[in-house]
Length: 354
Ligand SMILES: Cc1ncc(COP(=O)(O)O)c(C=O)c1O
Image (cartoon, rainbow, N blue to C red; front, side, top):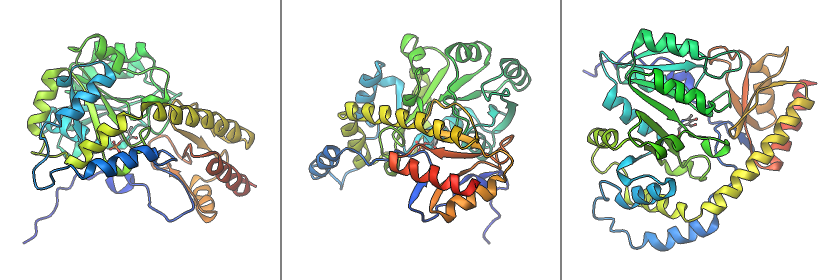
C-alpha cells in the first residue's frame, strides 16, 4: 500500500510561481542576462578534465576556499549546497525538528516557514511593521514566547524589497536565543549586508545565506551557500547527503567567481533599471514599495491584483501575483529585467490600467 504523504504541506502548492510561456518573464527574480560568454567558454573547456566516473569532492574544498577568499572568511565557515533553499533545508534538519521552533516575520520568503513545517519544526509567525521592516517590539515578543532555535531574517526581504538596517540585525542578534539566519539572496543589490558582521566576529550566532541564482546569472545551476561559525558548518555538513554537490557544479561555481567584475557591472545595471522601474510605476499611479533588491512590489490602487496579473499575461508579460501572501492583497511583484523587458512591462501595465 502506498502510504498517505505527511499532511503538513501548508502553502507549498500556492508557493510556486506558475511557469507560463510568455515573451517577458519577470516573475522569479532571476538575472535578465545569461552568464558571461567567457564563463561559458571556460566551462566548456574545463568540463573535459572532470573525472565523471568518480564521485565529486565531498567537501567541495576548492569552491569553499574560493568563496572564503571572496568574503574574507575561513573555508571552515562556508557550506555549499544545491541552491540556498537546500542550505536552509539542511540548517532546519540540523537545528529544527520535533520539539524545536523557528521564527519568521510576515510577509516574507515563504520557503522559510515551508521548510520549517516540512521538517516538523514549529513555525512562530510574527508581523512586520507597516513599512514591512522588522518591528523590534514584535520580534522581542515572538522570540520571548517561542524561544526559537532559528530566527529567520530575510534582507532584502522577498517579496517586499527593503533591506534591514544594520542596527536591526544587531538587535535581533542580541534578542535571539538561538541562531539568526539572515537570508541574503539579494544582498548584492543592497548597500549593506550582514556578512560583514561575521567577517568581524566569526563566533556570532549568525548564519548568512547567499545564492548564485540572482547576481551570478546561474539560477539553472542550483548553487547556494552559507557563511557561519565553523561549529555550525561542521554540524550542518553531517546532515547533508554524501556527495550532494556534483563536480560540474563545483567547477561552474568556481569559474563564476573569476568574473566578479562582470557580475558587479550587471548589478549596477539592474540597480539603475530598478530606479527607472520605480519611476515608471509612479507615473502610472500605482502604489510601489522602495526596493534594495532586483524586484519591486506594487499594488494597482483600486484594481483587482488577479485581473491585472491576467491582463499582463494576456500581453505576454509574467509577474508574480503576491495576493495570497499575508497582508499583500492585490499586490504584484515585478523582477527588474533588461531595459526592453521593463518597457514592455510598463507599456502592458499602462494598457491594463486604462
Ligand atoms: C529570499 C530568497 N531566499 C532564497 C531563495 C532561493 O534561492 P536558490 O535559487 O539559491 O535556492 C530565493 C529565491 O527566489 C529567495 O527569494
